[in-house]
Length: 300
Image (cartoon, rainbow, N blue to C red; front, side, top):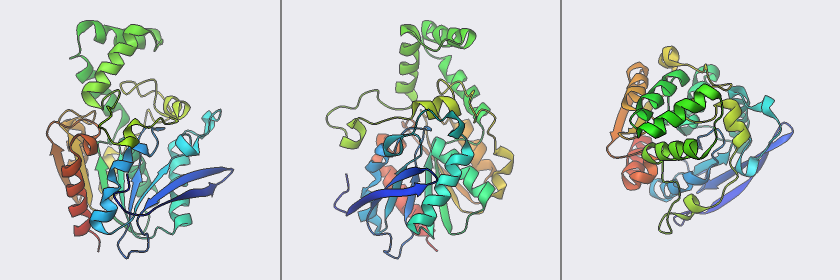
């Protein structure tokens, strides 16, 4: 879905592994590229191809990659890898290997957590701005908000989710129905139709091990290596201008988004009516216009 701009792809070495990357447009155009950090962990870059059009619209490169553990960077049988530090190190390695000096970052969901960790722990040079899209500052806050929303499901679905947590058995028809209904309400369609962009319908190799090990069995239950991840009290250390984007029907609830917005020193918040967790799909044109204008205002 390149919208006419040239697409290149390849791999960079990361320790004993390889990271797949994809570039739409020219990284030497003179404008800082947009570097996309996908969610999950383990969701792949695929859905970000709906933002390919930004390369042609803005005259800058759009760079995405599959984080270690999923897609074309798939690794399994290595639960020891699935920590924030692994993915921060991979991000640093990718920027250096591709020569991405001045960039705009856009992190969605877990990708926003990755961006926050990177900006605070590494204080990297060359970050023109950051877009924090449907993301979070604290894993336990996220879990509490998912539980609050899940209580609005039909009683039998809420009970199936509660029973899974009581027993530790996150399986079964009733449980799957409840999770699927919750995610359709607040994340995205379970199956995109033929009129949807190809990148949303394309089969992908999700990083199940990475997700379960780092996050947990579902969005409501952060029990993995990221379960105590919290940067709420350190958001003031982020010097880059930050655009917070979330939807009214998002897994990133208005409380979560405002918790970030209130603590970021140079921030703007856009709450998109009717959008779920994939705002760039539910309101594609508006989202792209918003991000394009934001980058143009913060290229310097």
